[in-house]
Image 1: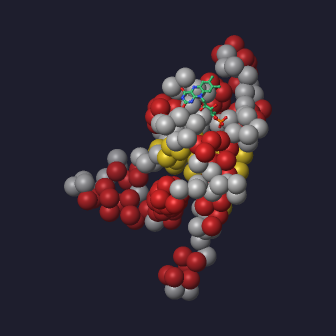
Image 2: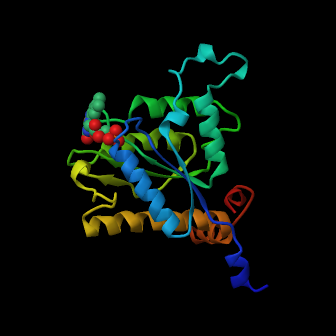
Length: 220
Ligand SMILES: Cc1cc2nc3c(=O)[nH]c(=O)nc-3n(C[C@H](O)[C@H](O)[C@H](O)COP(=O)(O)O)c2cc1C
């Protein structure tokens, strides 16, 4: 079997996609569904989730009796581990992320091994405002990076989202739609490279002038 045939046999890259809104007519859910569509169109596999599956009671250390975790946290952990990467479309509430997503992250962070560590993540947001909820995802980066997730540098915020979609759920503005798709494809390429081509990571480390050793071997 030649190299090309081997590459064709590789499993598709798996993406957990969800919106951090419980609202029925959520703009972020529309954006998450569009992301799922773009990923599948470009050869990725989507595991689409609803935030209601990951919702948890308010975190309280007293509830952690005998290492207990609520159902939502168990499910969130399972789906993070079952996928190569995750994508969250997150609403902005009062200049930050909604409490429910931070609460679920806090619960999931209590599992060992800690599930977010080394997972790739892409963040996006949608809001009727002119800034598209961008502050929320800057803040959502913090706990995720703190927990070791590789949060993709480029994020996407859809401004005036209540007017931005076509009736079919696409982004009406062509330039913006292309930027959205290009960003997703860049993320997909990174996740694929990290999974299937670890030699590229070695090249990257050596490019930085380091010789691979016990420390840098970690990333190979
Ligand atoms: C409590 C609350 C606070 C909000 N604060 C902001 C805000 O700071 N910035 C913003 O752009 N939109 C804010 N909004 C408006 C939301 O962006 C809007 O309701 C959006 O549609 C919520 O996302 P969803 O449609 O995915 O549920 C707020 C909404 C609520 C309910």
